Amino acid sequence: MPAFICTTCGTQYPPSEAPPAGCPICQDERQYVNVLGQSWTTLAAMRRTHFATFRQHESNLVGIGTMPAFAIAQRALLVRTPQGNILWDCISFIDDATIEIVRGMGGIAGIAISHPHYYSAMIEWSHAFGSAPIHLHTRDRKWVMRPDPVVQFWDGPSKQLLPGVTLLHCPGHFAGAQVLHWAAGAGGKGALLSGDIVQVGWDRKVSFMRSYPDLIPLDRATVEHIASVLEPWPFEPIYGAWWDRVLPADGKAVLAYSVRRYIDAITAPPRDGG
Ligand SMILES: [Zn+2]
Ligand SMILES: [Zn+2]
Image (cartoon, rainbow, N blue to C red; front, top):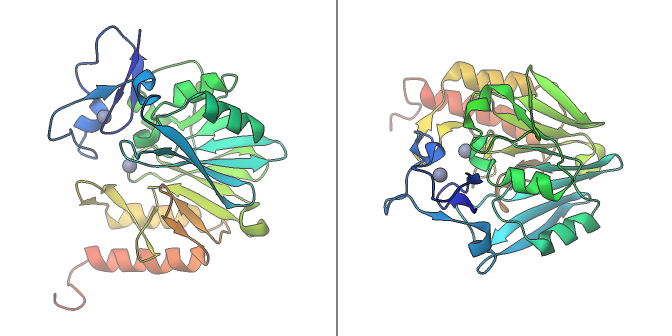
């Protein structure tokens, strides 16, 4: 039986004879149902039209994406460490070539995903790499559309996956949203892998939203809480969810500036009267 994949958000559902009745991820106000109506594909179909792409962002950090772009079009990041590799965020596409190439880079010891929009085909990825555990925050438990024993829910403010690789709970975009701190990033200065929990903008600043496609902002207390969670952690680059959404350096100062800018923007009166 095929495991159907929603073409708008990329979420894969459990194997079934017929496609699911709908996609709860897309029906949620943080996503949207395609204007042409709900549609589905499968990995077998995608393997005739798509392929994996790779780019090394820096030493020991390799992006993995899909061509042509699919669904939300995020790319995943493979964080390579002496203790094993962590796949940060995930994509819907995977094929034999992807598996061979990732194996050549040391395989995958664990998977962690910022929030439900990137759960994608996480179960396929885990099963392809020895049922590697998938670490999700328990507060997003209800958004797992394809339950599987490889999914491990954690609770609390942080969880170390490997030495120098730590999940931080940053509720906002989703209640269980998490980001990844990688201590060895940027030559040991630290890097933040933020998905779209801390969104890297086109102006190389960052922002925060409850819904990006539907433009629903977060409140002040939530944004200040995210800033306080990140405060103790050193980092230079911030790696957002897409190939070009990367803040190359000075992440701490840019975050502080961006938080002030955001709170100014949602707090009356407007600064320039416009
Ligand atoms: Zn969907
Ligand atoms: Zn999202």
